[in-house]
Structures are given as structure tokens and as C-alpha cells.
Amino acid sequence: MAGTALLSGMPLVSAIGGAQNKKKLGIALVGLGSYSTYQLAPGLQDAEHCYLAGIVTGTPEKENVWMDKYGIPKENVYNYENFDSIAKNDSIDIVYVVLPNSMHADFSIRAARAGKHVICEKPMAMSVAECDAIIDACKKSGVKLSVGYRMQSDPYTNEIKRLVSERPYGKVMYVSSDAGYISRGNPDQWRLDRTLSGGGALMNMGVYSIQSNIYGVGHNPISISAQEFSTRPEYFKDTDESITAQMEFPNGEVGHLFTSHNANANRLFVSFEKGWVELNPCHSYGPISGRTSEGTEIEYPHQSQQKVQMEDFAKHILFGTPNVVPGEMGKRDMVIVEAIYKSIAEGGKRIPLDLGDMGLVKKDK
Image (cartoon, rainbow, N blue to C red):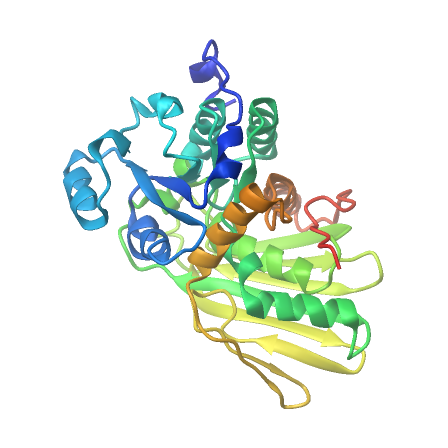
């Protein structure tokens, strides 16, 4: 498994009980690409329970820029080679892995072994086996694990969950989610290289559709069928361009999924027995917009989804609140991703899923 050989013989560091005695937890971002630069770091600037404490980068030129901009001390700056020495740094409590998918398992496991709580950006890993390895490493080291599903902390998402649970419009009958954008950039970008990404649109935007279909029903699916098509094979040579899939849920609900790197798509539609609710846009950084069949607008003040996501995880560590996005949720979605690719490979065959309640978070009333 990727990363395991590198870690053999490394000492395990027990989880730090001292985190519970802190008012704010220090987060180190691993990988300083656009998401860390424009979303995560800014989101941490006014967070109440966590702050930007350190960085890990493979680009030396970025070190002074980030140190100057965010007041990060030199001792909290690491590269990919000396990363494991972060175990000795008590000012860093959480490591957020924001790297190409092929590096998620390695650095998440190394962070866990260093005794740091882990946020792994989505998708959790390249395979279900890698997800299991990350979960196992975190359990063995006694650290907490979360996946970077920012939408799970968004108030619009939680309003959908409320409507599904409380049933003011009756039972859910049908759910549909679309997530995609048009890729016109560098054909050599890592997202178009299967060895780095593990797949195309499905591994990038498709997990949003999987997520929203599931919370739009309130249950995990019991089967899935899928199809893939491409209109620009000269550009998408190594990864999937567009995928559609059909989900079957345990109480007869039907789900539809669409994801693409060649179409702008950003919508969730939930149809109940006596009405419907829609988020459009749904998966973007915001503002999000929602409405119901009664003509009611769903409106919440816009705030950084990344800030709220990291705050939720910090509160989980500090105060024992529910882990909004546990590692099992990331694993569940990779089980579904693998089933979609299997269905495509077998001509759209229906693939049964045995997920039970895997990844579903039951919050206390």
C-alpha cells in the first residue's frame, strides 16, 4: 500500500491529551496550492477554535511568503522530507493534508504516527484499502480523523438534512445531484493524470454528488449503476470526463448522479411525496441559494465553509462534539466510487452495495 513501506520502523507517538487544555488548536497545512492559499488559510484568520500554526511545502520559495503574511515562525515550517519531525512540535495539533490524491494516504498516516489529529482533503484516498490504512493508523495513534467535506458543515446542507428527517413534505422519493466544471487548462495538470488523481471527474467533483444524494435521502444506497462518456477524448486521455449513475436506496428512493470535467453543473434536487427542495448553486464556495416548492427561499448569511468545517473538527477535539465528517464517511464514498468504476467496466451493470450505516453521523437531539 502506498506509504506503508516508508513508514515501517517509525515510532508511534501517542495522541496528545494537552489539546483539551488549549483554547485554540494549531493547524499545519500540508501543500500550499490554490485551495490552501485562497480558501483554507484565509478561513483560519477569524476562526475561534483553531488557527494557522504551520505549513509544509515542497516549494522553498513559498516559505518566506507565508511566514511574512501569516506570522508563522520558522520552527513551524516543514518540507516533505523533514515532515516527520513535526511530532516534536507541541504548537501544531492538527495536520491538514491538501496534496494530490496519490499523496493523501502517505501524509495522513505520517501525521497520525507523529501524534497529530488529521484532516485529509477529499477524496480521502486512491482506494478503499488506503482509506482503511489511514483509519487504522489514526486509531493506533489515538488521534482524531476527518475528511475535507466542507459542505457537511454548511447551514444549507443541514437544512436539507432537517427537511429529510422531519418530513414536512413527506417521504423522499427522488434525489438528483450534479457537480462539474469545464476544464480548459493545462492538459498536464495532476487532476488529468490517473497515477496522481486516481480518476477524473468522479474523484474530484463526483464525491460532492455522492455526498449530497446521500444526505438528500438520509440513507446509504444499496446499489448503483453507472455510465461514462467523453466528447473530448483528445484532452481527457487518461481520466473520466463525464459520468452518470443511478442509485437505489433501501426504502425505494431513487437517486441520479452526474459529474463532469466538461460541463458546469452545481445543483441538488430532492423530490418528496408532497413537494420539493432545491439548492442551486449547491456545491460551490458560496453564496449558495435554495428554494422550496412552496416558494420559500432558503437563506443563511454567507461565511467561509472552510472555516466552519475546521471549526467543527476543532470543537470535536476540544469539547467532544460529534465528528461531522469521520474517516468512515470518506471510506464509504470510496466504496461507492469503486463500485461506479466497476459498473462502467462491466457495461453499466447494477452493483450491490452493503454499506449499512457506514459514514452516517447521528447527532444527539
